[in-house]
Length: 127
View 1 (tube, rainbow, N blue to C red):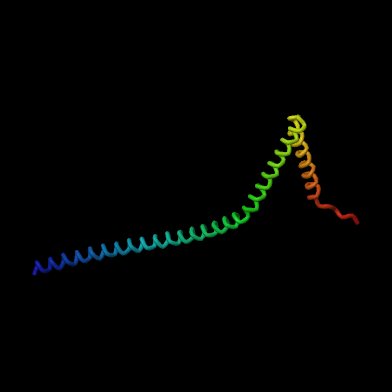
View 2: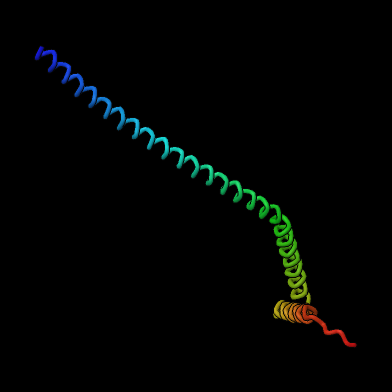
């Protein structure tokens, strides 16, 4: 009977060890599942942030073609001015004609900016 008791004791010890191993493995798997849930929630939050960023980018891009059109128009105007200036300087024979015209344009723009600045002030009403 002593051998049978030893075998039973050995089996109980092995079962206890197996239960502990299974319990530890279960705890490890639960921790792993919790980590995966945390990562999934982080990914969902990042997905939401990316969705908002993409929506903001689309709104920003939708206004961009108007800016591009304005830039193209400005470039075309500058090209036309340069062509006119080159024809004027060939007609007059004076190479400084280009500088004179750009100076006149600069003064014109400054006057226009001054008028816009003046109109931006609030006017007091007289009674």
